Each structure stands twice: as structure tokens, then as C-alpha cells.
Image (tube, rainbow, N blue to C red; front, side, top):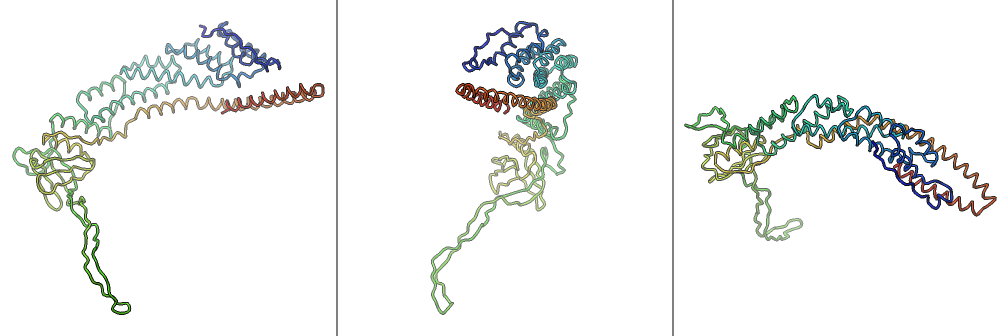
Length: 451
């Protein structure tokens, strides 16, 4: 299988012709042409090094990224069939060795893991886990058992999390959705245990669905109720009512004063007090409220109160309580923090009206898609951290060796220019200027790629 086409060499520039320096980019083209003309495994490291020597170029420093693309091209081709055969692995290792690719292991881990993750997502989306196929997929993509199972577990749980998020967004959990959740768990081979906060929220959504469909809960309130009166809700609340309170008292009016003696004055005129007031919610009592199919009963520490359902004109639901609007008398606010939406839905059902209720769902126990992506990236990072560390150490050693050789070359060229300056000062000055310009460009390029 050949993935390369033969290319024509590039012409040398003006300065390259003057200095008899070959166009170093042609080294990359010649390597391309070897891959185009020969069988992959027949290309040797000696041939690659011979090309590098003929162009006086450090392939690892100048063309590392370009040569890495050769490796990626073969790897991408092999991964099209979701499998890496022993022959494929052998060819990839051969490319890595003859081109001295330090980043090849990193690329291999990233691409095989990404490919595996895409295939796992397909399995999960189709809700069709097959252990034999899954194990075969890990083997064909050279994925370790630990990493493969971890990726699958997080992907599957994220899929279930998205399903639950949809339920919590709608605040309803129907019997059909409950069966669907069980089916997903079975088909994806998940030992799904729903407990704690998530179970509480699902139970609440199930209750809201039942209330929506006319199946109101029945509570044993322990009160002496009227005939055919049924209690549907009980809550601990603070009973609040609006009261007008005085914030401050200002005084205004016209007055004057007369001096009677040294340090003694008489003030004359009139001053009227002006009260500044505001309406505030004031706690009247604390106790338990009972919602029945006929009335709202409050049993407080200071006394009991009753509101007939027929006396309620409207009500508003907030995250911290319910405001009741009565046809006469003071309208109370029931202050409490838990399940105000359940209270509101039951009351709306009893009154035969529709209400927009706050979403009090707490989904803190679920993994979001963003969490799933972050976890996946962490797993990939673990797989390549050691490779990166080894690569950095090798690059540092190569850089030190290269700098030492370049210094030696500079010293030899300085000596040649000094000798030429005696024979032909003008030519020596031109060559020195060209050399300084070339060195400046090389430093700029080196700085760019180092960054």
C-alpha cells in the first residue's frame, strides 16, 4: 500500500547558488519520493541519513513535524477499519525508527484512544453492548483493558446522565421513562444503582407526574377531618403576613427663637411629625400546614387557622414558599424551602387551575457532558505523560549537542573568512554579511519552533 506520490525537487535560491548550498526542503521531498517508490519495510534508516547528510540538514530539528505527518498518514489509514494488525504495528514501528520520530508514541496513544472513544459512543448510542465485540475492539486498537473499561464506563454513565437530565428538566418521571431507564441499564450492561440525591429527585419527578395525572398523594394527618375530606400534603411552615411598620419619624414646620438672656432662648412656632412607613412580611406563627381537598388547615404554636379552598382567588409559587391570595382578610405567605413545587401542583390540581412552577431539581450528583470530556482528556494525558517526559529529555540532549556542533562550525568559518579577508577583502565582507543574515534567519526560525 503506497500513500505517497513522487514530487519534483525545488530549485535553489540565488544565495544558495552563490554559496553552493543545497535547498534543504528537497531533503523532505527526496524522503517522500523514497516512500513513493519503495515498499515501506524496504526503506532503511541509512537511506534517510544519507539524504540528510547530502543536504546537511538535521531532520529531527527542521522537519520533525513534517515527518510525523508521514506516520499519521499511515496510522489514519490503518484505523479506518477500526483495527491494527500485527503487520500494521510493525510498519508503524519501522517508520518511527527510520525517521527517528520522538512524538510517534504520543500520536499513537491519542489517535487510537480517540478512535476507540468514537466506537464506544456508537455502542452506547445504539444501546447495544456486546462483551465479545468490546473486548475485540480493545485488542484491535491496542487499548489496555483498564483504559478501555474506564472509557466505556464513563461514556455509558454520561449517556444515562443525559437521560436523567432530560427528566429533571421536564420535572416528570413517567412509568414509560422508568421502563426505558431499566432497559438502558440492561442493554449497556450497567449495574446502575440509583440512590441518595438522584433517587430523591427521581421520586419527586415521579410524584409530580402522578399529580399531573390526577393521582394525588394521600397523607395520614392525624386530624379530625370532615366527611369525605382527604389530606394530600403536610409541611412545616412559617406563617407570614404583611404589616405596615414605621421606619423613622421626621419633623417639619416653621419656628423661630428669641434670646431671653445669655445662653437662654425661647422657641416659637409649630412642628409636625411625619412618619415614614413600609409594608413588610412579618412572621405571625410557626407550625404545620395541611392541604386537603376542601381547605388549608394551619396548626400553629400560637393558634390554628383555616382557609377554605373556595376562598382562594389565586396563589403564587416561589422557591422559598407559597403566597395565598384570599377573597377577604389578610393574604398569608407560607414560608418553607422544600418541595414548594409539589405543594403548588397539588393546590393547582385541587383548584382546577394551571400554574408555572419553579424548577427545584438538584442535579448535583450527575456528570455533565463537559465533565465526561474532562475525564476522558485526563485519561489520555496519563497515557502520554511519561512519553512526553522522555521526549523532552531527549530533545534537551539533542539541542545541547547541536549547539556545540554549530559553535564548532562557526569557529571554522570565522577562520576561513579571516584568511579570505587577506586575499579578497571585498568578497569576504559580502560573505560575512550573507552569513550574518542567514544566522539571523536561523535564530528566528529556531525561536519560533522552540516556542
